[in-house]
Amino acid sequence: MVHHQNLAFAFAWPIFPQAYEGNAALKKSALDTTDIRILSAVQSHGQLSKTRLSEIVNISPTPCWARLDRLKAAGLIRGYHGDIALERICDFTQVMVTVSLAQHRKADFDRFEAWVAKHDAITECVATGGGMD
Image (cartoon, rainbow, N blue to C red; front, side, top):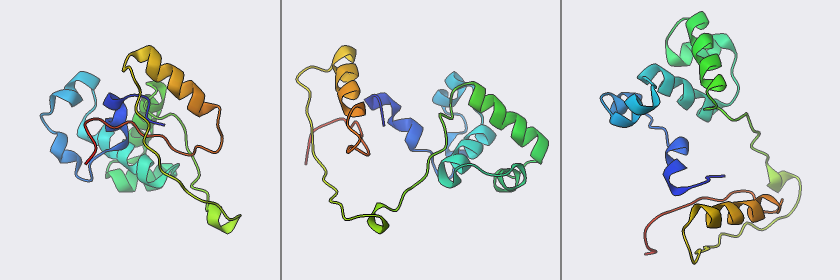
């Protein structure tokens, strides 16, 4: 679940991490392009072996694993999740809805997110900004 509009970045790693070179956001978070490549690989492939991750990121296994441990310790990787093929288990209907909050204070977002978290039928919730087209 995306918690706030400004966290959408966490789920939108670029395919080409070099696009982040010189970016102020990277400097603020102390991530370099190798860290971004690791996060991108984990986001794309989930949990990987030390050897496979190092091959994807193109650095040797030991420093790659040390970086992965540091990223986990920093809370940048929340966990690993399975992409369940629900259509193979049961019939279901996927519905997309738009919800607009009357107020945009942190407490309002927190209350809405708590409500969403209580409903197992909601499989994804994404915050967006701007108007509807």
